[in-house]
Image (cartoon, rainbow, N blue to C red; front, side):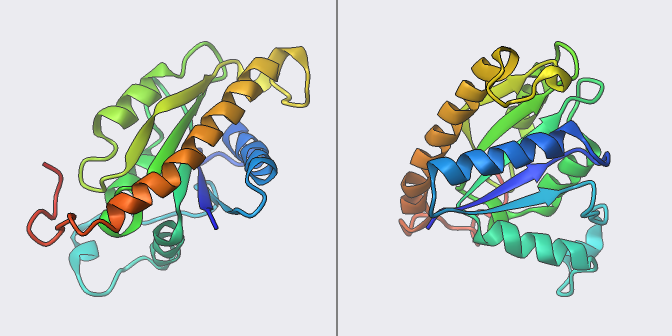
Length: 199
C-alpha cells in the first residue's frame, strides 16, 4: 500500500496551496485507490525553528515529533509550494532542515509550484538545488508549475484542463518511483553512520 504525504507549504489560512492539496489528494485516490494520503498543512502545523536542541535525545517540539512520524511512514511526497518573492516559504525551508535521513531519505517527491501570476519557476530551482542535501530526499525529474492559480477551478473547465492533465501525469510518474526507491532503501548499501550528511 502506497502512503503519500502532501505538504501544503503556505502558512496562510485558506491558501491556494491547501486548496490544490485537496485536489491532489482526490486525484491520488482516484489513480491509486488503495493508497493512504495525508495532508501536512503548514498553516496549522507550526514547527519550532531548528536549533541545537534538536540534536539532543529529547526533541523539544511535539509538533515535529508527530510530523516526523508521518513523514517517516510515507512512501512518497508531493510538495505544493507557493512562490513568495521568488522563494520557498520559510516554514518549508525549516521542515527540510528539521528532516534528516529518518524521514525523507531515498523517497520520491514531486514539486508542484504555484503562483498567483506568471512565476513559479524559482521555487523549483531552489528546491532541486539545495532542498535535499542532508535529508536525501529524491525529487523526481518531472515537476508541475501552475500559474495564475486563482483562475483555475480544476473542475473540467478549459482554463485548468491542461494543468490537471499534467498533475495526473506527474502523480503517476511519482507512483512509479515508489517501488524503485524502496529497492534502494532495502539494498543494504546505505551507510548513514559513516556518511551522516550529504556529500
